[in-house]
Image (cartoon, rainbow, N blue to C red; front, top):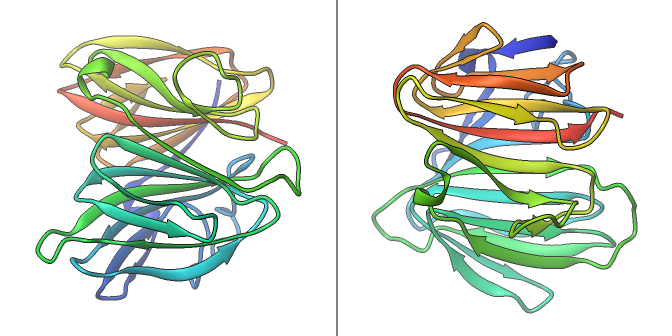
Length: 236
């Protein structure tokens, strides 16, 4: 098993007042030549959006954009006619394809919104843009790893245009799970949302991450109650 550890303190950071963002990979004004992407995973941003603030209407194309709400809420609007509010437990997928304009705002006047946003390169360009969202109960992933988005359509997860799988896991103290790589040649990028994990002998705390390649499966063990994110993507 090949691993590369990315401590939480090594991420890029930008505090714009209305947006407090941490970047796992080079983004906006933060650039690290060693942290451009992990296989087809281009962006993993850990954002806190202030009350009443957000991202105005802006374009994307040829990218699978996945948003996971940790706390608070986010109001989505796009030029495809979609409009909705996503909340904790909700996952949003936008396939930008040939081009889409969208905005994302925190509708609360009091509470900040905490979220992850992922960008994954699609396996084909120029697809018809689309939008979808779904709620995934935290109780359903107690001592389990649950897929929330993938290109395989094996369960209830949202569809993305890539041989990739995005999963959320939750482990009680001293519990362990085995994770199987979703597709031959894929690697897995695991980030600890909360708690502490032992992954392949690496001890990871809150927002620490590890990239794993060269294996078909690996073990995840919890040291205290923990939550985590796994992004399983082609490496080329």
